[in-house]
Image 1 (cartoon, protein in one colour):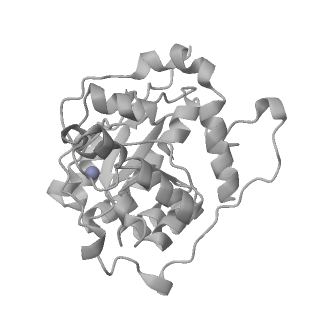
Image 2: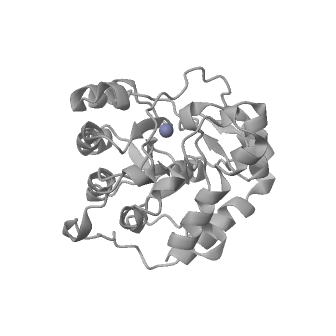
Length: 293
Ligand SMILES: [Zn+2]
């Protein structure tokens, strides 16, 4: 299953290069001015009790339709969740984990057949293997948020590479998983950093809705901010290292679905909006579904 997923991710990148120039230009706001201000996650050495052990919820696999689509209609993701490209969709994203709260968030998502993208810190991989397995087993996306959550614009080229490659290596070796997307710590980037990420094959993902969950640490405030501002195509920034965020997600997932939003991973949103994410390009949101007469 994981190997199949890995192959699909390779196909996802390799199969659509011809469409990059055509499709990417219309959805790449480059002007995000508000840097991510999340607190730096603590180092692996100081976190000793994050995994919740054998009493965790059992991993629940959502049944997948076994019927294979015809070859000419087969997508990299063969859409076991029945995502409708013509309907609104949003992507919940979680930075700075995994942590002990990742479990509850994944559970809330899978309870409603929703998925999300988890931008993990590379130095947390070794100490949170079970949480990563649980996240992947429920069809979420894991993406990279650097190895040690440093401001990449302050680092040398070699140091920047060391914030990119070891994350992929750890996920490949320990989970047979290759992350595709990258989110720079604090949203901090410049031309040089984006060029390195381009050379490394990394599309760069920002966000368009930020409830400042790391700051407000209040379930209702987080829920209300998201529900009051969310639009089709939004990428919502959250952090799976805070309990109020996990509590907010339990309410947000059904509330967003009641409002008609499909809750998808960032890569699913790219796929079902017909956009190939381009390495080194910064994406803040994806275009909304087009109105039809
Ligand atoms: Zn962060």
